[in-house]
Amino acid sequence: MLQWPRKVSRLAILSNFGTNTSIRYFNFRAMEPIKQTEDRSEGRGPRGWDTRKRQFQGGRGPKRQKTRKEKPAKEGSNDEVLLADVRALFAAQKLSNISNTSNPSTISNIPESTALKDEDSLSVTIDLASWGTTSVDLEVPTINNVSTLPEPFTEIDVKVVEISSTGDGLALHEPSNRIYVVPFSVPGDIIKAKVIKHFEYEHYSLADFVSVVEAGPLRDDTRINCKYFSTCSGCQFQMLDYPTQLKHKKTIVEKAYKNFSELPPELVPLIGDTIGSPLQYGYRTKLTPHFDGPPGYVSKHDRMKGARLYFKEVPNIGFMGKGLKRTLDIEDCPIGTDAVRMGMKRERLRVGEELEKYKKGATILLRESTLRVQNDDERASKSIPDTIKVATPSHTDFKSCITDNNATSTEYIDDFVFTNIAGSFFQNNNSILPTFTQYIRDHILPPPSSSTDPQIKYLIDAYSGSGLFTITLSSLFTSSSGIDISVASIASARENAILNKLPESQCTFIAADAPELFKSVTYPKDETVVVIDPPRKGCDESFLKQLLKFGPKRVVYVSCNVHTQARDVGVLVRGIEDGGVRYKIESLRGFDFFPQTGHVEGVAVLSRVEISKEGPNAAE
Image (cartoon, rainbow, N blue to C red; front, side):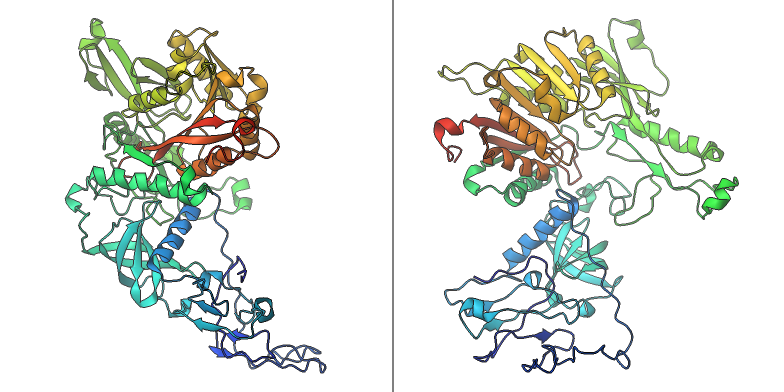
């Protein structure tokens, strides 16, 4: 079978091979075959050029500029996720596909993405002798020469066929057999889009949303609740009804495990329906608008002499524009809570009044904090300036907006209280957290059975932060331990354990890097469950190896990036060769922490399979 090189650029056009010819060249710039000189005794190369002397460069026109190499996408990044969706769409649309036939001499529709680039002639070579044949018949699809594609900033009409896992629409432009990535669009839309950039070797292009030429059946622009939608990069789905958003986010999880887990389909269970947020607007308890520095430039030499730039007017304060390297002026954000929106208006005024204090741009923290008083407290009947008052039958909450990164914020999840350094990480949608933590409580222990296996008594909470899971799950276990690399987060977690009246014998916290976790905890593996909630990049290899060698009875993997989660879960299911265990997936489900956006949180529940007892294919 022909092994196509991984790095790609151009299609091969091979035909009419003679019996004495093993390699054929084709020049894609001239669109004609290159005559090959067989007599190399005279010092002539395969293109008929004399290799004995330096070639004359004159008369060949201007020097060709080298193509800027495209950097590979980072693992688990939006670029990698988008590329996987683009390639899958090409396969589904049969725009570019290798046709494997019983006759090795026939290849149909060789994709441009599988051809080998020759930096000088953009030619492709194939050794026919390795096939045991001397001729190849090709059906060559349309070649997407970038020079024939629409120029940047040209406006074109495209039809959107699906939404990518990044939240952007994927549209087909039939004249060029090319996919355009268009934000703020949904399947069925015909969109006027402005071409921004062509990715020559990946068969897709980026475009900006201009307008809706014809709305598809899923689109209803009367649902849009923000005047900045389609320019601000914050939201993507305000034109969709909420059930459709949840359905799409289930698809994101499905595609993540299909594209990134490297697991056969039979090892991945059906994905559960995405659990929605009780609030679709007004849910974000943290926003971070920013503004850029004053325009102009001061050299390092002049800065050392004290020279500086000054703001001549109040800069744009807000968020990045979609596809732009500039900040939009955002006066209000409807996905923020009432307290955060109130704080945003206040901070915008303050920056304008104190502009002379700023030498450069800045990021503004807007973090909600809650003061809770019982209704029999006389404070419950009073008002507190700069707060939002929320009364319930048992208590009254006063919600304010903190802007100091080092201040302490307070959040309530059901009857649990959590304090955090305001600038540190904590979940940003409190409305879904009770449902979220209850789901994990319901699934962290195995289903009841008549088995004589030891009961799970211990919890290890890796990447514990300020103790959300350690504390909310602690009542299920004899002892729970949380670990985090951040000393400040561990200090908050210990304080939260005290606030929630949990003794140290029941709930402990350790400041250490996650890979050092199993050196610090001595729980018996058969009685232990591990909760993992890593950052977006997922778990590193050393941590996964240690986890597999420790081999806890169960693992619950919570992730804000289902693509790196799928990659890591694949490692846990496959196991490692030098001892240890492997796991099988019990359930997978998404949670919608960020309605109106393309983000989804994932929860994977895994149970241990002993290779020694059930063999290497036990998980299957």
